[in-house]
Amino acid sequence: MKAQTFSGCGDMCLGFFEQAWHAQACPLATGARVLELGCAEADWLAEMRRIRPDLHLTGIDWRDQARPAANRQIQEDILTTHAFDGETFDAIVAVSVVGWIGNGNYVGKGNERDPLCTQGDVRLLERIRQWLAPGGWFYFDVPTNPPRTPQRPVLLRGYGPAELATLLTGWRICWQKAFPDALHCDGPYIAQVITPA
Image 1 (tube, helix red, strand yellow):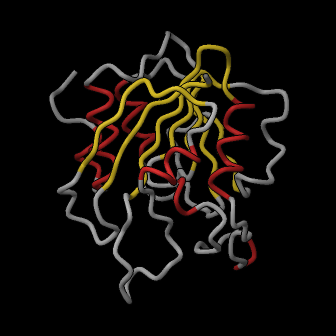
Image 2: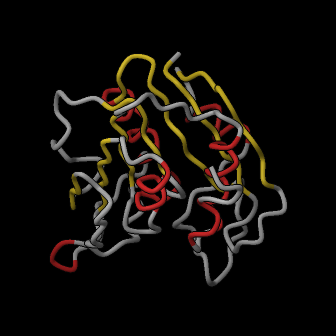
Image 3: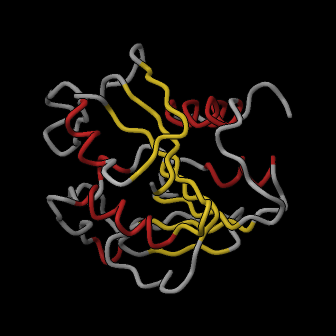
């Protein structure tokens, strides 16, 4: 495996996943089924396909952005999709996604904004629990109390210790790393790999 992988794909948050990957916090058996949430933002799927061509990769996003590395790609709202009814994944990855769910920030099908849901992040983790196979894990990163600026209005959730504790109720942290010096307008970040408790 080359020293630099995901961080070379043009999104700072992919570099956070890269650190989890190199720390071996994201184990994947041969042929594992992996779901990427918010696949239109950065091309995590292409790099994962390059590193692990044996995986079955699925991507979902409200926005329309072709991801040829995916075995399956779905353009639907994550909170209302029925595409995964009865289906499970060995791993689910959300690079810079959780804090945006339910905020109506992205334009998708028919130029509509993604649906509003004040507890979108909490509902998302409930859905992820349903979609994970036994022994599966979920990777995500979130900003820790991002500054409110004209460039970043209140749409993005910030996660201090209390917000993270609420979000992670019923989950066990397998790996985590804070990125206090992340040079991004969203502020510092924390990344975690979790499994159902």
